[in-house]
Amino acid sequence: MKEHKVDCKEVMNHICENLGEDLDSPRCVSIKEHLNSCESCQKYFKSVDTTITFYKEYNVTLSNDAHIKLLNVLGLSEED
Amino acid sequence: MSSNLTEEKKLIEDAQKGSKPALAKLVKTYEQTVYNFAFKICRNKDKAEHTMQETFLSMVKSISQFSGKSKLSTWLYTVVSNHCLMLARSNNKHSAFSLDDEEFGANEVPVSDWKVKPEKVTENNELKKVLDEAIEKLPADYRIVFLLRDVEGLSTDETAEIVELSVPAVKSRLHRARAFLRNQLNEKFQYERT
Image 1 (spheres, chains in turn orange, green):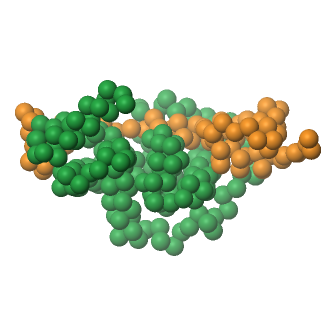
Image 2: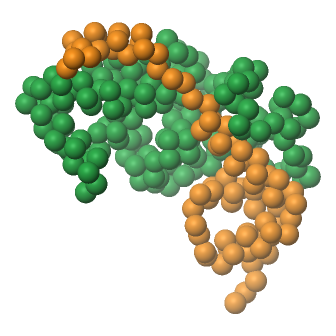
Image 3: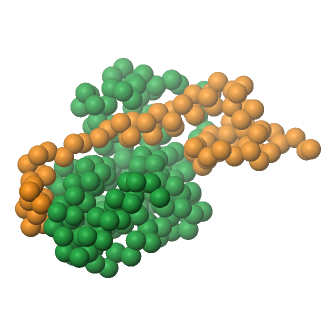
């Protein structure tokens, strides 16, 4: 099989394109091999993953007042 | 079918027959998800509350026409997304900005470690401000794809259905949104200690 050489920029773009997808094409295998041996790309991968985690962890909770207001707007009540 | 989905199907059928308790149960099941998702798009609690109200008003009005072909949650995500997109377009804030024109590629070598940790988000208002500012720069149609796919954890197919785009178009927007947000945060987090 012809070896597919990849560079850091290709790996970083691949990370953004395919994060979370389990791909095993020859290109993906080359990407994974590069990632295992390149500290810069590992840090880039971590920073993209952390970006997503930041937005996952940043949540807001609906107040009880807003909940009651919503039911009122809809003509519903807690007893329904 | 899981018991939760069976229970939800029964609630929808009862709501379609005019049952207020069934409607109230559906609202209570999804209000937190809808509010949180609306906030993540709008980054504003008042707008999120308004969007949540509009979404459930729409649900109450249209529940009789709900066919059950897709999940109720998918339908609610669609209503929230459309409402927020409409708001964003009426504000016209990002009309001149497109990521298609943006140099967002990753060519920074060496890459630095970040000095902040995600678990700090809940108690750190300064960090929240940075996250708000970064995502507010992202056009709403890209923001919604990123939030649906990466933050809410929907599949690429479900995301494509909600935003009415092809799967390759969703992947392209997701790629650009991830790179854009990562680069925005990298500017802030590379050296700062938060």
